[in-house]
Amino acid sequence: MRAFAAHADAYPWQWRPQLLDDWLADLRAVRGRRRSTIRNYSATVAAFCDYLTDPAYDWASECERRFGTHPVQVVHEWNTAVHVQDAEGDPSRRAFTVDELQALFDYADEQVVRSRAAGRKGWLALFRDATLLKVAYGYGLRRREVTMLDLVDFGPNPHATEFGDVGVCRIRFGKARKGSPPKPRSVLTVWPWTVEILQQWTTEVRPLMPQAASPALWPSERGPRISVDGINRRLADYRRALGFGPGLDFHSLRRSYVTHLIEAGWDPLFVQQQVGHEHASTTSIYTCVSSDFRTRTLRRALDATMAAAARPERTKR
Image 1 (spheres, one colour):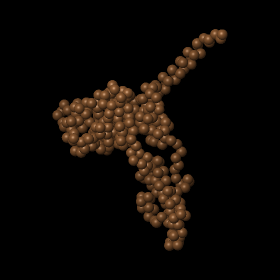
Image 2 (cartoon, helix red, strand yellow; image 1 turned 45 degrees about the vertical axis):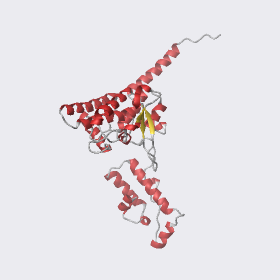
Image 3 (cartoon, one colour; image 1 turned 60 degrees about the vertical axis):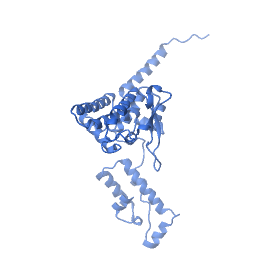
Image 4 (cartoon, helix red, strand yellow; image 1 turned 180 degrees about the vertical axis):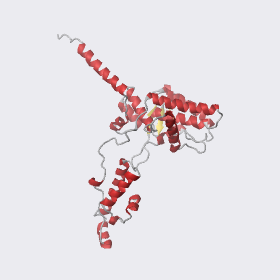
């Protein structure tokens, strides 16, 4: 609201739809804001104007008496964007393929080996970041969810004792709804390799960190916890070094988790609950199954149909 008021350079009772048009055009054409952001901004202005023009508060008549004019609603269907589809994300955003994901993890591990062999202290941070990327994929976590993990956020799963003390990852800073606190959830461990990398990090490498006394799972070199910006920069550096496009961002690890579980035949409802989606339609947006997976699925269906057709009918008694 402050940004719109500053751009309009006028009092609310002087606002007109043309002022909103100019502001939204500036946001889109000059500042490069996304459509979803612009729509949220216009919705905020609309709610404020509804408050100003609500007869229950008598602001309109008070402004008319004092200033000779009154506030009006400046947000209308004809001058704002509407929400017409579920998926409005950047079409370049996608999941990692299995080969791309393996290349990313291998490259991250190589940086650790090279740095340690050269006797540099930075190998600890490189090891931490390599493990963090693997854990983010291994549990399908968002950036804030993985960076806010503490050592105590892992526990045993009594129904999967083979995973030891890391059978469950408890997320305390899940994505919140507007006006609500972070939404917690529990994510079950599904791949044995996540157990190995977590145990190596917590028992062998993390104790060597300068901030090892911190309760955070990922302490930084100078503070108790790594920042989201820090891990974003690390992934961006690796992505450029590997020649990957900007469409493969940190959230692509979460897309990959969903996609690879679905391709492996895991129940869609289980996957939905693992990533904390309220609706199955949201999970489907994240699913970027490969053409090979679709081909295999089609082949199985066709083979089953042909086998059923070739089967002789049972003789009726």
